[in-house]
Image (cartoon, rainbow, N blue to C red; front, side, top):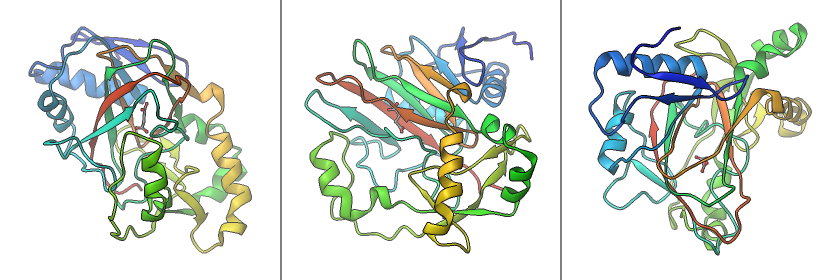
Length: 282
Ligand code: SIN
């Protein structure tokens, strides 16, 4: 693919590219937007540097890709229900998203992707890792691929359930809503999904929300699930993004997992996240 309106520089062999020549605070013409969308589909996660966005501009960029998600559990940014503030203060011991995961896969229609904007980042550390689930799938044996075709994963949101809320909130500045006992039912998704735009197959299980295969117990499912979740994050499937103030990462939740690194004790890291709704994985 050649680009005329933006520059696209891959940052790793597996996934991830830095996009240049664009100011996301401006209304993007259709040609530039089309190239950004193509770069997103081709690279699985894209990055922008040196952006200055208001909350509304951040949301407007997200809305070019679809409707915006309101996080089912986290307290939103005041006045902006569609913005999920990801905050770590120097005294916090916990952060948001420090295990490998896809976002919100317990929902029938998990997000298409999320756009994370760095407001205040530590001098060093706090990078975000991404892992290509296309490569995770493509490197499995034909025998295992065939077995997985018939399996569905059962996803739930026990990691953010009301019974863990208070303990988490004590250790972290990003807060889950206390006293929220709303039900979040389990949801089944195929273990291998086909990306609606690229047509490529991707592995679609993650350790924090997939706890069994449909029709099996957790104990029965565990060995294969553990194998898949470990395989899915091999270093050669990953890229690592080093943040600067004003950087943006936009990941495709249908084909990458991500993980935030908690390696900056005593420092602050403030990000705003806008999440774009997706469709039912098939
Ligand atoms: C997340 O959205 O899971 C957190 C990502 C990050 O803070 O780098």
